[in-house]
Image (cartoon, rainbow, N blue to C red):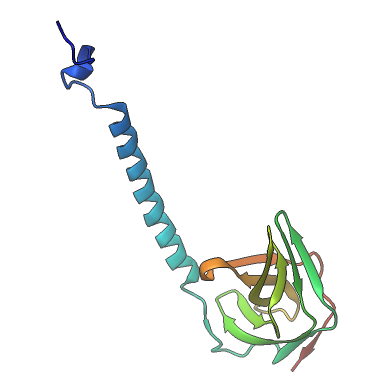
Length: 150
């Protein structure tokens, strides 16, 4: 008589325990995800660098605050002078004169600014440096009222 509570092939070691299999599968998926995320972060950030070429303006001045909305984000970019700080292969990052006020499931203040594509003088995109230094970027609904300074 078998009093161990185990019956069938599991008690004889023919098939692994379900919890053990699931744990192994989850660990493998976690490893794959981490390697993929690290590779994506490395590739995505590899072209961001301090200004080395001539930006389209020495400053871009927003004449009034601009508010953008996403699903869980409402961010207000202040009026004032935005200066070029970084560039990448696609364009230039102009830093906001003060923090950007955001309502993103709470209240936050972020570094960020506006983005101008290479070959353009129009600030068509915005960016925020969010949690843990990650960058969030989006497109303005329309080009905000601004003045470009040579």
